[in-house]
Length: 113
Image 1 (cartoon, one colour):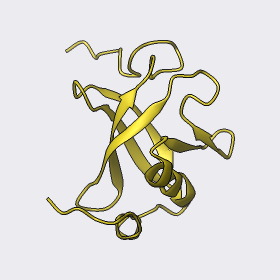
Image 2: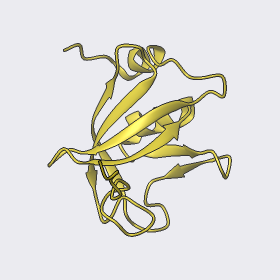
Image 3: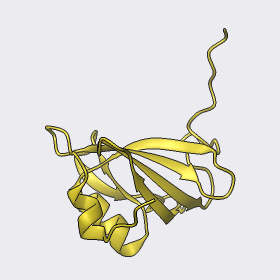
């Protein structure tokens, strides 16, 4: 395990041609995957600096701090980057449901196999 200073961590991120990187939010207590969202450099910098998880809204074209209006916040516990630098794993303390539907996690529909 390598621990990186925030600037070094950000330098390892491979942002796509839109300046975005995929961010997977995971509950730090029980390991459930809560949601998947996008971050740009500013959202990641704010998240690492404040520990209040901030994402980039592709539909609204703006930053949004998780829970800013709902109160269902995410507080960063750990930030990880994958080996390719193109996916982030954010281990968070979730307050309230993670999904905008009111579900605890955005992953509540399963394929019947």
